[in-house]
Amino acid sequence: MNMNKKTIITTLFALVALTSKAQVKSHVIGSVAEGTTPVELVIYRDGEDPKDSKLRPVLKDRHFECDVEDAQIERWHIVDLGEVMEKGMTLRTGEFFVEGGATVTIQLDGDKFDIQSTGKEYQAWHAMEQAAEEKFMSAYEQLDDNDKQKMAELEDEYHEWTLDYYKAHPMLGFLFELDGRLKGFHFNDTGLAAMLDIYHRQYTALYPDHPVHQRIAEQEAVGYQICGLKYNDYDVRTMDGQQVRASEYYKDKLTLVSCWASWCSPCIRDACDIIPIYNEYHNRGLNVFSLAHEFKTTDAMRKAIERHAFPWPCLVDLDDEFDVFRKHGTQNSALFLIDHDGTIIAVPNSVEELKAKLEEIFHDNK
Image (cartoon, rainbow, N blue to C red; front, side):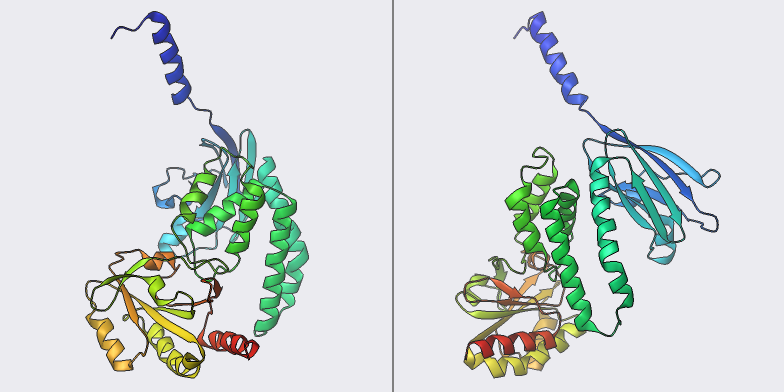
């Protein structure tokens, strides 16, 4: 098929437009305080492996400069990767946003990065961080480490304040935080349901073409078991290898889901501690089933079940066939308490917390 000259020119212009998609660029100016010696600094994009990054600033007279580009405003990080490789961890981490025309200044002093930017989205996020520090830091510093109740109360107050701030001050930083928390989902992230509610109520129209919205949608589609939301159904296998739906074991029942693994000693200890709780509450309406995270064979799981005489149904995800444990935000131990309507009402961090929650539920139901 022949193409005329006008068609060819139009096509070329379209291709140029596609291949020269606008980039945003920030200029980074960094410095290291006297007495501080980083091993190897690395700058990398959120969600990527820092070991793969080619942005490795070289210090000259304790300073460095570089440009960082992205297809749109995104969150980036700086880390002393060399210290991670030497010691297995580092406190030298920081983050900034790549925004068009912004100048980002980074100073490393000891183990702390001080990061400033002329970009408006970073400034909005940083203003929230500063407001939170002014409001809560003094209270945290005065808190007795052994006073768990006051610590929990202060953390609850901080989380509520943060959510209210995000509601009153829409910012891209909220979308980045939600994206990151979904990617790194952990079962005891009890504030995630509230963040998702805020997102769907008032954030879907903020930067509507930004790919962060697609990333959030993809993570929501995984089916994470998020406290405060419905417990998502999934496929799993019984001990004899039959594929079943988990809802067969929790539908219309107050149910405790106990995640464990035969190779996890604390998991087995917790499961054993749950047996008397099961015996106390089962006839009063508590249903229990367990999920085992096993690899290659279920032999060790079967032996543990027989040895400890777990009295509830035991299901298994062998070799992550159904990705069940990723959806539960754990690799081994976790507890999920599901109400009759299928809502996750608690994710106790210990058997003691589970006892307290069940006492509360059954006392209220008297």
